[in-house]
Image (cartoon, rainbow, N blue to C red; front, side, top):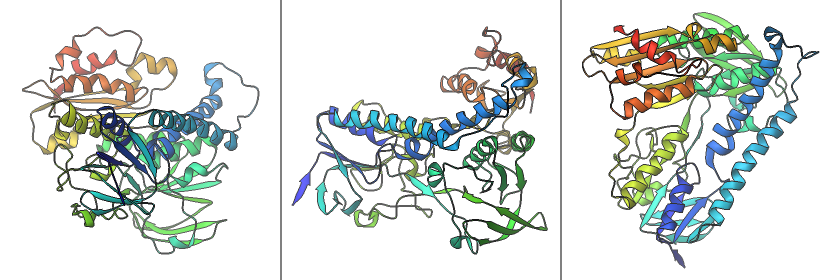
Amino acid sequence: MTTPFDAIVIGSGQAGPPLAVRLAASGLKTALIERQHLGGTCVNDGCIPTKALVASARAAHVARHAADYGVSIGGPVTVDMKAVKARKDRIVGQSIESLSQWIAGTPNLTLLWGQARFTGPNTLEVAGEAFTAPRIFINVGGRAVLPGWPGIAGVPVLDNTSMMDVDTLPEHLVIVGGSYIGLEFAQMYRRFGSRVTVLEYGERLIAREDPDVSSEVQAILEREGIAFHFGVRDAKVSGDAANIRIALNAGGAAHTVDGSHLLAAVGRRPNTDEFGLDRAGIATDSRGYITVDDQLRTNVEGIWAMGDVNGRGAFTHTSYNDYEIVAANLFDNDPRRVSDRIPAYALFIDPPLGRVGMTETEVRAAAKPALIGVMPMSRVGRARERGETQGFMKVLVDTESERILGAALLGIEGDEVVHSLLDMMAANASYKVVQRAMHIHPTVSELIPTLLGSLRPL
């Protein structure tokens, strides 16, 4: 027997629940299928829990430097990792509970638990039962991959998911991967009190960023005592749960790194290999991502793909924007497109990096006539008052159109301030609109007009 629905959403990450609720609210009999836990990566082992850990780590860091502000705390700073984890778990639990109540209180919406597998273009099997719908939305996310190093299968390896279960302090955390996930864990655990070493295949950190950004991020983290090896090759892993040894070549020299814990943060892959996509005829690319058009439709009529699984973004905000695009096209007669959105994201180390639009490297490669402005955070009054002057701000502007092309704000509150530039880009307005605005003193944002006033030819 096959149970019919008007619409089925597979996966309860950031795009899934709001779309399922919107479908149900429109009068469509809707099913939301989840195989493990509500909320997806962001709620369970991504944004929410990691930023809760970042907050605890920052509290420890600030406490250790209290004397710099004329404050005495009366003894050494200690970190109770069990209490840190418990706080994180409470925050995650609150998010899951809120999501559960939302779904349960929505008429026309049924929550199904189990692994979904396609049996045809419009049919699915879940826990031995068959379901069908003329509209199916795939929102199944991705998972971490491990480096293919000899011997790595013989030792315990943590990833961003299993790291959420750690409630003790690693003596020496070795992190494979010098990009966003790896660097956030590196700084937080160094601030908790672990010794931390980062192993990076490339010649610098976060290779998608400009070299000056990579260099400054490295300097910030090295000042906190984090060690780095770049150009890692020929790595071999040995040891056991008590001690993990990585023999490697870095920069032409042999090294041996001994650690108590090993965390893999070298990338992610889409969860497309367990859903029987071939039975529905759904096309994927060479990396396993579901191919979609500009409105997130797959090659199969009546099937859409949202979130990390479509390869069109790897963030919570891009996933939620996928939902907005699909809903706008289905219900609002509003032909929104993926290609309309402006790339924007952040690296949540401390201080954070806020990024929007093109990098300087991309602007140069495009041979665009452009202007550039760069300002150290040491010129920002708010940063000096807070004693946090690391980093810099950089913005790029099209010479002819006066439109902002991109920006990198590495510094205190850079992840918030960058939105002032993002909004101007979305409005397709001249940079002079911001440059001539009067901003409040003393803030970080007040230096954006000054930054734009310092533009020079690239």
